[in-house]
Length: 257
Image (cartoon, rainbow, N blue to C red; front, top):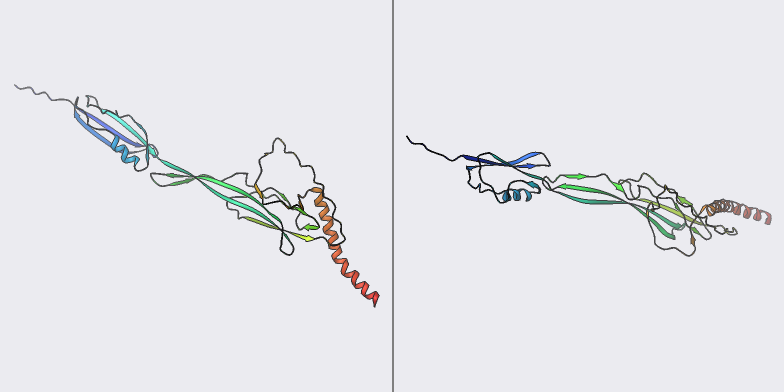
């Protein structure tokens, strides 16, 4: 009678999991005699996935390899989708032109900009892009702008009002303030700027818009509350002067006849 002894067969399985989707990418099944070296490493398979945009999270398969044993061995390699994050910016501009009524430049333009930004995350495995919400660097508003005062001239608008609710889809804003000559004989009162108010503790001291002034003419002063009232009075007087002058001339001609 002959008795034959055979070596036990061991098994090893290595499972590669996509942690981003929760799916199994592939499984490697190995078998061999107990005590034999498996002759397997995970390096090549991992590289094949990282070349496709995956990133390795963990690999519990022994780096130096392993041997088959009587009990089955199970190992897991975890990977995730690599991503690229970029920032996209878009700007909305406000420009105010100051001109005389003949079209000539009266003062340097006022310029302000609101910058909106968002992140774009690209999945390196699938190419899919994910967008964050747009955010504004100053809350999406343009501050009110007082028109400069130019000696002997009246501005068509004393102030450009604050503009709120500006979004990334808002078109650039352009305004024109026209300066008219004060009629002869009307004296322009001196300008006494009001004392600027101090922000409260609840107000941000950060500028609400990035304002850029090209330069400041020597005969241009910032418009304030008192000066605005003066301009209103001057405007009414100017209109009256324009109306009365022709009537006075007509009466003078009749008297001469």
